[in-house]
Image (cartoon, rainbow, N blue to C red; front, side, top):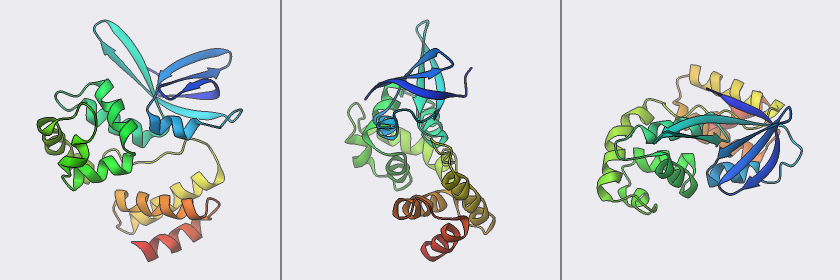
Length: 197
C-alpha cells in the first residue's frame, strides 16, 4: 500500500486529483479541504498522503493534504456506520480542526449540519472518537509542501510538547502563528506559542 505520493499535479477537481510521479498518473479521490490546499500550486512538487479503501471488490485511493487529515479519515471510517464517502463528506464540510473541536466539545448540531449525518450517527461518532482525539490521535500535522517553515513548525511543536503542552493546543497555536507570519523561525514560533498557550 502507498503511504504518500510526491509529484506534480496533472489534474485537479474539487473531488479528484491526478498526481504525476515519474510519468505515472495516480488518481486520488480528495476532500474540499485537500482541494483548497492543492489549488493554484501548479508546478510545485506536492506530497499527498494516501489511503486505499476497498468495498464490494473495488478499491479507491484517497488523497490528503496532511497526515492529520488522513488520520481523521481513518478514525471516522472506523466508526460503525461511516464509510469512506461519509468521511470525505465530513472532511469537505469542516476543517480538521473544526471537526476535532465539534467532537471534543460534543457539538452534535455541528456534526448534524453535514449532509448524511443524523442525530444517532453524530452521537455515535462523539462516543467512539472523543477519547481518541483527546489523547492526540489524528493531530500530527505534516505539511503538504516541504519548506524551511514546515521544519521550523515541526521543531517548535516538538519543543512545546516536551514542555508539557497538548498536541491539539500546540497545533492550533502554530497554525495561527504561521497564518500571521508564514516565515516565522523556530524561536519566533515558540515565543509566540508560549504567549498563546
